[in-house]
Amino acid sequence: MRRGWLFPLLAAVSLAFAAPLRVGVKPAPPFALQGPDGRWEGLAVELWEAAAERLGLDFVYVPTDLTGMLDGVAAGELDLAVGALTITAERERRFDFSNAYFATGLGIAVPARGGGLGALLRGLLDVRLLYVVLVLAAGVGVVSWLVWRFERRDPRNPEGRDPRWSLWWAVITLIGYDDTQPSSLAGRVVAVLWMVASVVGVAALTAALTTALTVNRLESSVSGPDDLYKVRVGTVPRSSAAAYLERRRIHFVPFPNLDAAMDALELGRVEAVVYDAPLLQHQALGRDGVRVLDARFEPQNYAFALPSKSPLREDLNRVLLEHLQSQAWRDALYRYLGER
Image 1: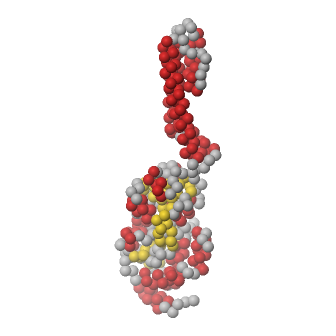
Image 2: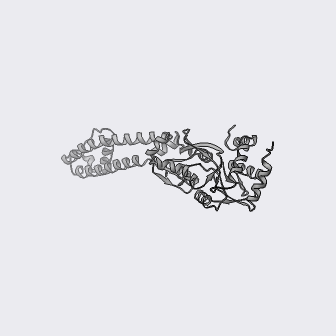
Image 3: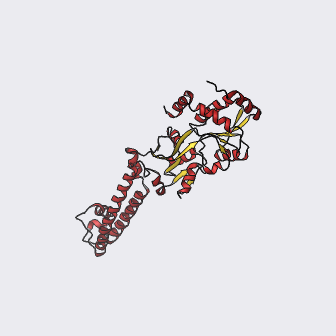
């Protein structure tokens, strides 16, 4: 049902915006994304286009990034910004916001490590484990060479002339015990030292192997925001997630966009990505190596951004309030987010 105020409102807004509006937009699936045909779509895009149609507004989309969107609206170069824009006090000082149209919060994406053969291989290729193995292998080589040097001239041990015997003895002594021992005094000194070193070496190997396999069986060392201090975190600068991390004194690796941050997460360059929860969930759908934790924190609201004192703001808010209560909006929420 049309409201009585809508007809004069349309006339007033049309006069105020005779030229097409410049609407900034950036990829933020599922709120704003560009289809194969180049057309923009998404939850926020559909909401804006429905409002623009009700208000009789012509507009053109201006693709940009987050920084360009914020600066463009603040400078008046853009008449509106559409997407997953969080209302913050800092941004409110630079420009205005419409009424909020979506309530959400921050989320955390982590590697989706599971058990099985993949976890076993990752554990066996752990750097610390390989380091211990290399040290022990070097020890076996050095000890076998020393024993061979000392034993090859000792007539009491004819086997000592064969370097293969000394190598076999060094390996067996590392993991157990052999009845045959060096006969020379120097060889026995080396044997005692090697036996002591073997106890330490095997203990180090066991600890490294246990740690490597245990860590790679766990899905993540991050279970919530309190764990972010312990890991390497990535996010997009100037985002609400970046502001949260800065307030908490959590260092983060900056990435130009969420795609780049999630790529880095899959490659192991970071151990967690903090960003808007619905955007993380949408990104994780096509990435088998990533999952989003259930934890939600730092509640926030999305809205459209407008230049300060924009004549469009009041009229836009009225139309938004009506549309957010409509069945069309509920259908859109279900299509893009699965919310009923």
